[in-house]
Length: 206
Image (cartoon, rainbow, N blue to C red; front, side, top):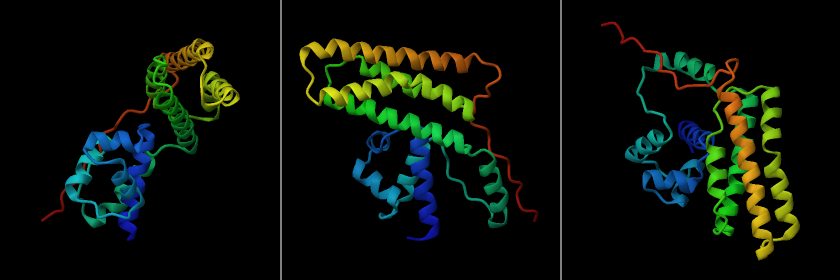
């Protein structure tokens, strides 16, 4: 696998995780099976240009051809707007909880409260996290941690008497996440990251 293909594969995976999408969900957006998305992210399959364009657009990215001498400037701009280590960690924490919610949905489709929890996880603001913000996020996710511990204790099979209890725990977790979101959205000291237009590269002088 060439370095260029490896970079593309890595960037696609990182962008997918940042948007809290599973490989299956990304595949559904672009009309490809999950197994093919997995191969693309591993760099073990030739990626057609048409598929690449569909994937990057689904991830709110774009494909551009730039002069080779402009690549250092482009790389510098990308690094400037790349997530901080704390932000990357926060994204990973959210992703792990989203995977747990998806696991619940698959195994317990009758727990209708799960959809609200999944939506709350997707609505967590994309902010530039620092250590304090990660601590606040982890506090907001404590009800999910407690739910995970409860599910491990009772096993995979839910008795009828457990459904209501688990459903209420999911609602508590959803409320906690929505509260976290509201705090961040209405906090003027937190700068929510928005997609910035790429710096315009001047055409080569003739």
